[in-house]
Image (cartoon, rainbow, N blue to C red; front, side, top):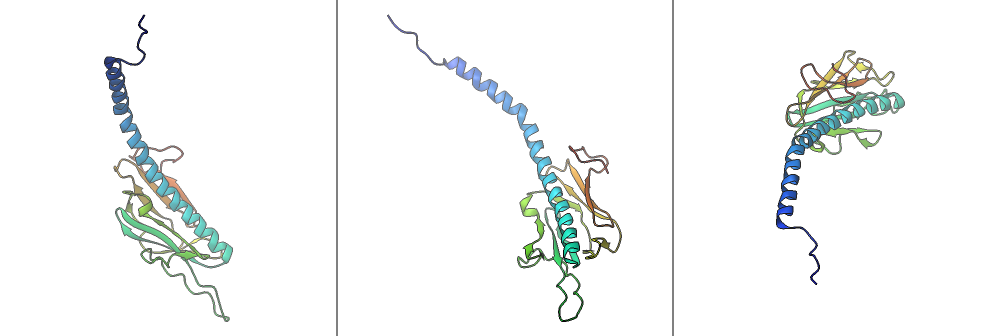
Length: 188
């Protein structure tokens, strides 16, 4: 008596692979869109975190912190430098703008203080800060007292996230008009 063979027939295997290929083709666009959103949102979250930490360090140490953006497009960097503490009866010096290309620059409280585009491949800045901003060491307010912001764009260009900074040095995220919204990011 011959026992029945266990396993798959060639036809069953081909049907299974065809179903798997169809599922992969359906899921790929959603998967790519997820990574597109995640990259731009991660960069925006890091920029907001850098601004919040710079403001906290400025107030904690009673020293001005300068925020500066260098580069444009997909090659950008935002960093902060604290002013040198007062010494010998002299007041604290002004905070120099950060130069991200110098690995010894962009330092606040002894730590490197920068968000670099290398961590977020193909995320671009389409509306950079412009000149260096200074967070006042007394209140953490921006000097000059005005609102500023920058816009980060996803690799596909589909998503934009705007980082807005109030005159008081507080940063928030929003989605510009005409762009798809993201979870927990309100429209501008």
